[in-house]
Image 1 (cartoon, rainbow, N blue to C red):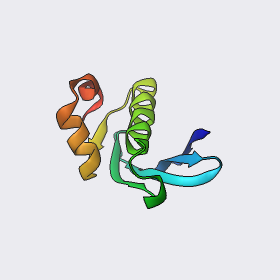
Image 2 (image 1 turned 180 degrees about the vertical axis):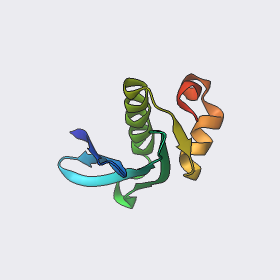
Image 3 (image 1 turned 60 degrees about the vertical axis):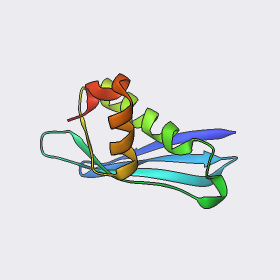
Image 4 (image 1 turned 90 degrees about the vertical axis):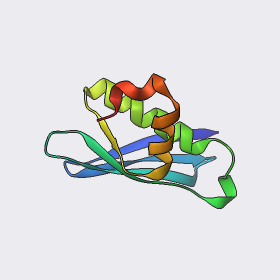
Length: 94
């Protein structure tokens, strides 16, 4: 079973994915003074590669940005590539 969690602080945070309660990957961010988040890293453990977990982490981040009314600055190459390919998430790109 896949489970996602979100750890947040004033300066940043991360979205974490677990597969059967085993850490499978994370997406980290820092928070700018304007409240927007800068996603700087997405990593999925090699044992869990190819399962779409990076996309699930980004879906979680996009949902968070929409709920909070903030934007995402895509510094991470994976996130930048997804923003370039998917116009459905352009509304949360800073």
